[in-house]
Length: 168
Image (cartoon, rainbow, N blue to C red; front, side, top):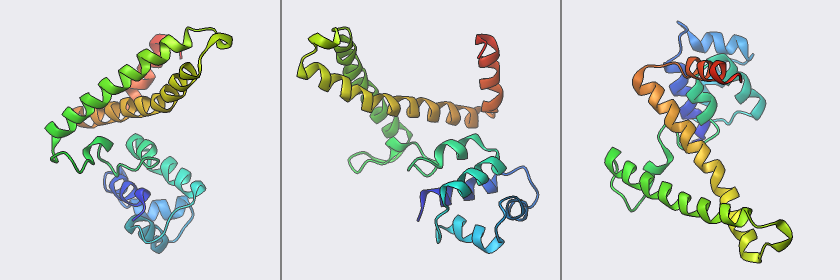
């Protein structure tokens, strides 16, 4: 099953429209049968279609997580070593956070070294953090979206308020 399928299904189920399938079919444009196949994971959407569905659905979690492999759950839930559940996920997330912090600390020390004087290890440290940093941002975005879902807040309003305060 394609990751977008479950995300689209969840987004349409929580849609503000009375008959979202019909409205989406008209908006894309696509047949209801095509949308149904996307929703069931029988057919993959191309990137342009995925963007159009994200614009129509107007669901922040869909827009963000359709590009992720977590299918609506936080990615650290998927571990063969840990029990499933919120406590195991939080414990694992805390460990991942601590590991990323160590990588960041070492990378920042290496970044403070002038480029001409960096060692091979300095460059490896910088590269390691460059790979971890987007994951950190992704985890924070997921946390914000989950928080908004749990507290019944619209993330668009929180982001707009933040941008207004900081002039963004």
